[in-house]
Length: 107
Image 1 (cartoon, rainbow, N blue to C red):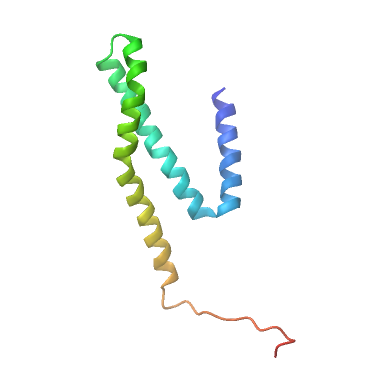
Image 2 (cartoon, rainbow, N blue to C red):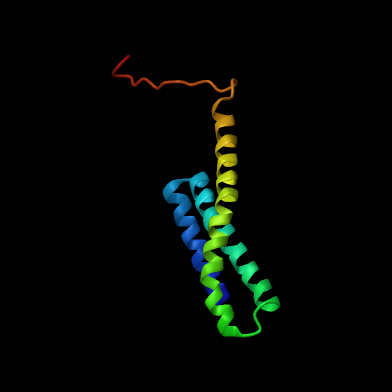
């Protein structure tokens, strides 16, 4: 089952990269992946330490997920801003020459 999920995730990622471009797809994937990993790690660790009753653990997943998602947004936006700054550094390079293409009919 895990392989099926990874396969579908891979296909969807390739399609998303084709659709919006490499950098936008990377930013979107990181915006989903970082909070998800943090939520899973926290709930696994807290579930072992704090909640001996599984019902309490299941009920507490939603509030902790909301708090962790909101708390991870500065990290996600910081990473996205860093990616944008690196992209803009290449655009503003002085070694790059802009050229326009003129068709034969216009010349």
